[in-house]
Length: 306
Ligand SMILES: C[S@@+](CC[C@H](N)C(=O)[O-])C[C@H]1O[C@@H](n2cnc3c(N)ncnc32)[C@H](O)[C@@H]1O
Picture 1 (cartoon, rainbow, N blue to C red):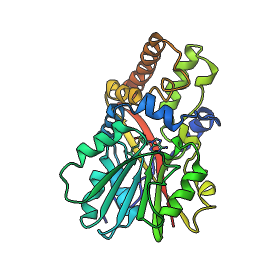
Picture 2: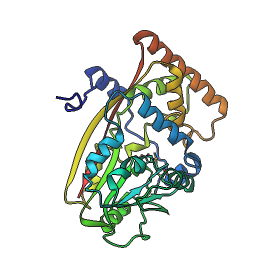
Picture 3: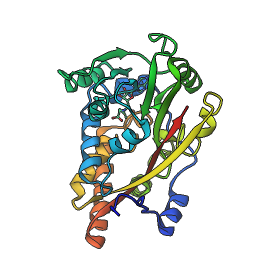
Picture 4: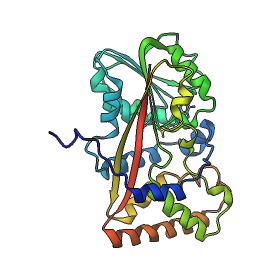
């Protein structure tokens, strides 16, 4: 038996107890336009985030391995990637679609440019289309065998319109894979983040958790049910382990200080975020001194819709 046969389980009663006190019911609203104009004017934050997820993971299977399994490809499919970002996932999936066709779709021109560069010269034909995932009029009915939306649906303004559009452009026997997190994913980061904010008497509006609360693994099935006959939820976990506080801080910054600097705290001065970083760093450093590393436990997965 290989050690990848048994799904990894990092959950402990202590983590569950922490999540029950740390993760707020409310979440940030971060619209697609805000995301594009404040977060995705270039892909440096996304690049950094992907690097950290890969470098510090302890699950031998990476995100793209899980996606490739969920997409169940034969190699000839037409695939649409909604919110393709820098094209990292498409580049990983492409060898499984040698005789297929890729469509990279994103609201942010900078993301499409990065995806175009990443896929430059590959033999699998690839189109790059700018637009918002709740309006897929650029595509005819029944155009795709696979549609995927990876960590992007929480930005989409009109999710009902998006899912109706996905159903329309997806062939009857096709599948839609939506990847997202549980809201208590990476609770350790929210814990140090909120503790530092509390120490600073930060504005109430900053005490909200991830925008993925809009559509998460927990509430996603109900939102997709009107549009798809079958929805299978697949959960998997990972744990990022940081032996140096600075590596975690790079990740924390790339997450826009848990979204605090991307929208709700946009009016706060740079000094606010400098102090926040200092306080978060001190807490992470203390945790590393105690246990040897700082852990971020990821509860993630996808919904396979057909
Ligand atoms: C967190 S990134 C994920 C990128 C990629 N799917 C991945 O997993 O590496 C989210 C991407 O979704 C895009 N996006 C956000 N809202 C969108 C929308 N309404 N329509 C299309 N793309 C959108 C952003 O521009 C960004 O490139």
